[in-house]
Length: 395
View 1 (cartoon, rainbow, N blue to C red):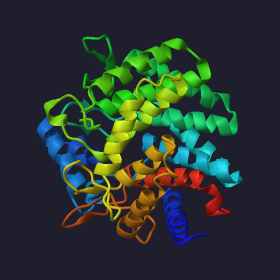
View 2: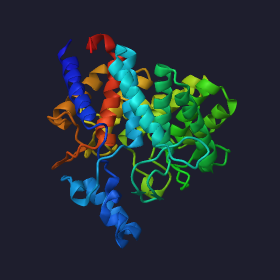
View 3: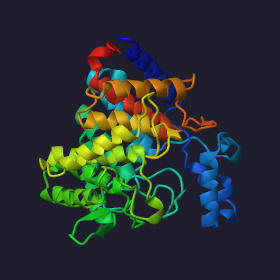
């Protein structure tokens, strides 16, 4: 085993031990509204105060959550990322300990399903105030639901538990029935982030595409691909000539960032593979070239935005591994990936195995967020293991 692989294996082992010791529970950058200050005082009625309160906790380098009674908890999307990771590990090692984790995580995810919608769906374990909308705790989103649906299908492939498959398939009803649609002049459309808003966030629409395509693999319903194609066409028309995408259509959504670009590429690729329609290959090629040339430095640092380095967010190196794996470009870009992972481990992993949230120019936010940091790095490492399994050796 070469030095890089040894470093990665040691890093992942420490991370896995940390996450298991935490029972996969933790804090989140956006969980500030779980505080008693919001839940039990009139301050929680103010949209402005909710925004400020979330940003205060999100941006603070000191973790004040215990002081304000914000408890560690399960995040459904985080559990989905862990579940995919354990399914990938089981595909390599076929160990009972991984099978046990797969069943445990899947059952916890199903318990956290949001009721009252047309199909299975999930949200986050906290109220969430964004600039564009307010989402009460467990409001289902297309983002959380898509990652969980993928995890359920992977769990089904391992266990052959029909309940996991049926739950995963039913998520398409949530996407097609409960999400709002925004149309362009050609009749193409994109999905809203949740049933409670009408925003046009490009990665959210494409994650809906990914979910429909994953369900199509099992049901072969033509309607799923018909809808998926319309969303891909809608989003690809919004791609800039240099290959990039803004985050969305609203005036304050005009930034271009690292990991959402990775999401877009991954989802369009999955649509092409499952549908057999290669009409959008040029969009993938332009987007991938822009992504790799823009967001990663020669030292292995992962830029958040297209025009500035900081903050270096842990989500970005994690998504790089996944994007390249899904596009079948991981081996071809191994030198870059090794640099990025090595820098990230050296600069953003604590001695206890957890990863920092963000590294800024003057300080770092070292709060060990379970979904945003630990679950994402766990998920990414599992795909790296899957790609280079012969080099990692025995578990």
